[in-house]
Amino acid sequence: MELINLQRLSEFIASAAVEVAIQDEEGDDRAPFIRKEVTKVELCPDHTHVRIYFDQQKFFAVPLGSTVLFEDKQWSAYDQLSNLTYIIRRVEEQ
Image (tube, rainbow, N blue to C red; front, side, top):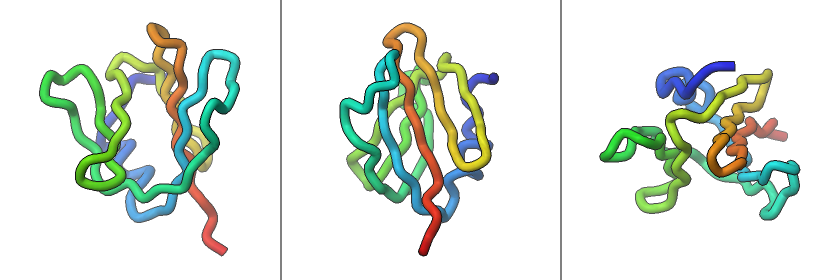
């Protein structure tokens, strides 16, 4: 496991359709995975979170101290303070 690396995250999601979700500590899907296109990845102004944008205004912010796990087609970041896991997985085009 590692901490968030902006370049590696950007390469992972570059020009690929993804599904995103945020899960609680039990892994329950409070909201289902939704299909999105990531348009930009950048640090927030106070450098505490990484913003993953889906358009010019909509994004989710992942705390920089989150523990990251890269799998074949999935990136996840676990935030110990909130007990939330942020998940981005590549979608196979059909």
